[in-house]
Length: 212
Image (cartoon, rainbow, N blue to C red; front, side, top):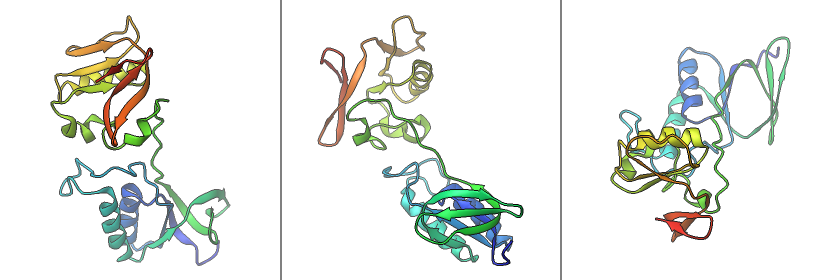
C-alpha cells in the first residue's frame, strides 16, 4: 500500500467518529475523518444526557471535537463517501468531491437514519415537538400530553416508558393490543400530524378529527 496511506480512515465525523479519531490520534496513528455534515441529530437544537455538556447543541459538540482531534494531527475531510474498495493491504475510500483516501483500517461511524411513519407534517417538527427517544427528549415534554405513533410493539413499549414523564400518554394502537398501565388507547388510525406555526397541535385521525 502507498506509504502515504492513513493508518485508519473514519467514515462519519459526528460524536462517535470524532471520539474514535481522538483516541487513535493520541496513539500517534495517522488518521483521516471523512464526513458529509449530516448527522442523525441534524435539526435538533440541544443534546442532552452528555455529562458536562448537557444542553449543548449537537453542532457545538462537533465543532469542539473537530478542534480537539485536529490538535493531534487528524485530517478532517468534508466530503461524502461513494464507495469503499477492499484491497490486499487495506481499503480505498472513494469520495464524491476529491481524490480517494487509502487506509489500512476502516472505522464506520456513520450513525443511522430513523425511518419516520408516513404522516404528513411529522418531518416538519422532527427533532423538536416530535422525537424517538424519551431519555433524550422526555424532560422537555414532561407533564404535557404525549402521543405515541408507529409500529404497535414499539408504540406499546415507548408509551409505557413515557408515563415516567407524563400522566397523559395516548398510544395509537389497533384494537386488542396490550396496553401498558397508565396509558390511554386511541384506536383510530393516525393519518397526519397537525402543525401550526411550526408547533405540534395534535394528531389527525381517519375521518378528519384531531386528537390534541
